[in-house]
Length: 315
Image 1 (tube, rainbow, N blue to C red):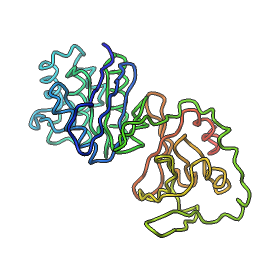
Image 2 (cartoon, one colour):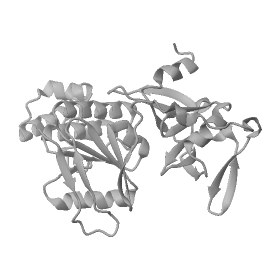
Image 3 (cartoon, helix red, strand yellow):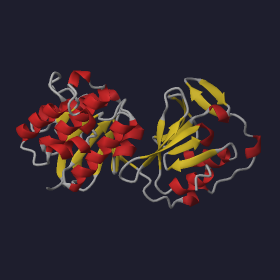
């Protein structure tokens, strides 16, 4: 197959900016935006008429078993992949004889994945495919993306979560009113010179300032889960709530190092005391699960995995 060019220069939308994007068939492309802009983008794609957006809304046969659902759609789409292989790929082989209405929401989601995979649609466009999914289901989706890449199928994944955009995409973009801009993904972490900033008075830094409306809130470092970069500015994140700082990640990184914070990714600094789990996904990608109320996950650069294992004495 070949790259697919997505051209939205002629759309009529008060929310969505015009843009043009080439979706390559050799890697996964993701677009991150807020929910309003995402909805407008999906509507524009669906109005195109020649593209299908997989949003897990298409009907499945709830009274049929998992195997029967997959067998039906395999025949319908003329898929050449053996049925048994499909069941194993989507980790459904142990649920093959279970009626769909008795399956968990995650098992049903994997049946949707299987249906989309067998459809052979070109290009493949997914909307929020792993939102609220468990680790097993997310890993299954990543495995499917690898299969699609191996088959040279152009894939676009549309999400409203930055972590999901970085986890799933080989190339990630952020869609805003000003246009579509590529997000830097830390495949090779070579810019150590950026962190050579002054650390004077670090030992006296016990509070981290952030702005909320016209107020300045001072946070104790131990209560911070992680800090992420958004639009060039650093955002403190505590239990899913974000607070804007007047600093970049590079400016704050050295100051927080003595409090156990670590630059785990170009766009993230994590509080190592809050890390509960290191998740290894397929495609040689990693995430850190944070021990907070919402069990946040943030990307871990593949170049950092050995370093962080050493920090936790795992090697």
